[in-house]
Image (cartoon, rainbow, N blue to C red; front, side, top):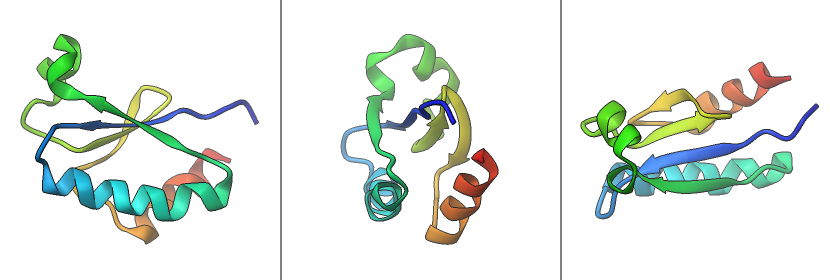
Length: 82
């Protein structure tokens, strides 16, 4: 399987972003995966797409989850990738 890139579109001071980050930090390493934050306000394209909807989890640049993410949903997302 080729490398998979997970990014979370985030914004400073976003409590929902903190919650999603905690789920990502809990689950992704057990699958040998990591993620990177991307500031929605630093990228005009992302700001145009997601300004009112953060956080957004991107897999290889495509949204796979928005606003809230729990462990079971993330596990389902990871299984669909295989």
